[in-house]
Image 1: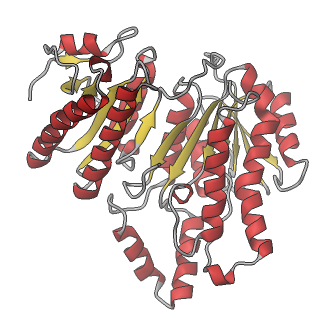
Image 2: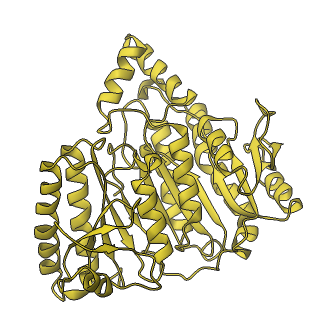
Image 3: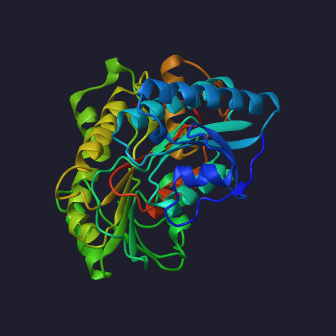
Length: 408
């Protein structure tokens, strides 16, 4: 497979322009040996076809043999199936994107993602910087837990408010937890950060980070966070990284416990975003809600937790279309198994209910992950920073599950 070095940072590039640069007239898939650090990219342009079925067929017969060749040659690294979606709602575009999703997810089930990881990127040709940022994240070591995922940067129908060039204040909740602490560390030094949790900080705060002790279950908790942000000049980023575990067999769950899990994992996020909506709307800000792969697929002995995370995902999808929130760049990050105290506690609870050794339960759980390992909080923090940086309006979902689950 040959091709000229092609970048994706030209102003308003089109698929036809990129195809011309690599010396092909085909609007189907072509191999791009893109800029260093962006991985291997296969480009699809559905605009060349009127028949959706023909477009999908051409995409499949072009992509699958090339992926097969990469697999046979022991290719290592990221492969992105990049669909230029000038008309994301069109039949051809939608059919091609679903075709690519099926290919990426199937390859992820068959080929070790630690060697070759395949993802789909649905790109808006008018936002080349988003494409570059996305390909760079997927090709990076910190993006290596993302496999079989689809990052749709072109689905939003609204224009949204333009984001301010100068970062302002980031509000990070759950700042004492594994993911929240990693997010604070990632953002510190690049912007001012207001770290929020129920108690005092457990370690020395980095420069530029202030702390607010606030219980979001309190009716005034979300407003207290919004007031603190306003006093610091207003927020342009919210990262809702707080959460409560909900491990337990169905027969052990009662109403108070279910209610508490739902309140912490769903209701407080909705209240928090509503309280900060004016600040975020005014500057085209972003809100990253830390959901879970348990919000995408059901898990045994996780009924309450899955209910709360499915609810959060559903609420976010609806909120992205709500008039009062539609100018916010809303993001969902859905981590899989992350090596945090919450996850280790869940393993202990599962082991206890099964009368097994926790180490054996952990080993069995990791064996179910195509990537063959747990994610590190720093990887989720990197995904959060990426989502906050891309300019695409509306909802963008990042599934960092090591290839274990895929969004519907």
